[in-house]
Length: 422
Image (cartoon, rainbow, N blue to C red; front, side, top):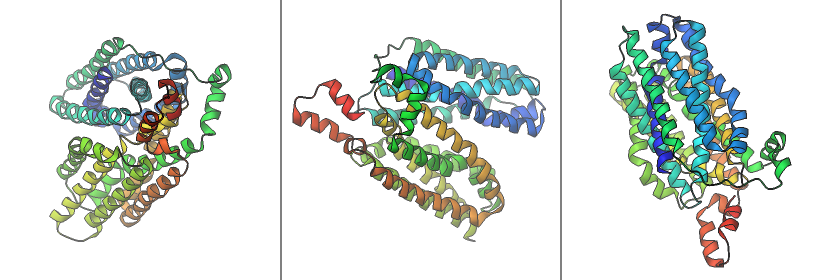
């Protein structure tokens, strides 16, 4: 588990090195224009949507570790070639390789966490993953910002080479991991067929509802961070670019500072109620954003309210990290955690692709409707979470019950316990 967490930190550190500077690199440093730069960002999303349906199947058949190693090598090649690419075609192909590798890393690492944790330790493991990812992205972005020089192509080549080195270093670290043998799916060959596994997932009403809820979560929050909400802050609230950076830093700081304090609070709460509470917190965040842009107060108050919006989003994210990912794992039948993780990652990528496309133009020009729309989406999260709670078993919604019941019975075997929790 320690190696897996090191892997999460290294991969996030490498991505933080380059992702914030992709647009500048392609449009200005390579002189390929804003259209090509926009296509590069779109290619990342498209590549993820193409590979994720196959990633889940590969994880189920081959195990998460070989899939992760292949994704890391692909991402390393994509990063290195992106730093050396001089034409639009090579830039787009390199971005596709980097985006595909990056997308597959997420469900592979999540499945490794599932396989190396128990129901009692899983929430803490995913909270640690989220903490290290945000820390790695923040530190990587900070160091990368001091290394880049928009007048020097070589500085960006160095940046992408360091990112590739991080991925290759992670290959070495992950190669030393010895994974426990994952359980096979009951009913073997039919259940293991691609059609059968997807049919089984779609017949799981709780998982389908969680995917719908996940789409709204990512669409209404993560899909707005660097698109609609930032455009709204600049156009409606009049915040400066430095204040926008402060808001992003406040989001990361809230996650880093509050993650484990929040974990103690949510560990003994119903998962559906925790997600419902996040919807209410984010509704308050959108009210603060509305005040920032529409309240007609002083500029200082508007900036403070806008920064508070990002901080409140961070608090909600810290509550979700030990809640949603373990719930996906507990909904998956034995041996299909990779399939379920990949399906949820696919939903996330769809939301992250649609969110900026919808929120960006609204945030820039339709200020009032933008805030009201996403305030309603946040309240919708609360409704969907409470509705999901009615589909969950007692142990899925309150995982601590699984341990207490086994202790009380005194006869359950470890295998029986894991199957009950699944």
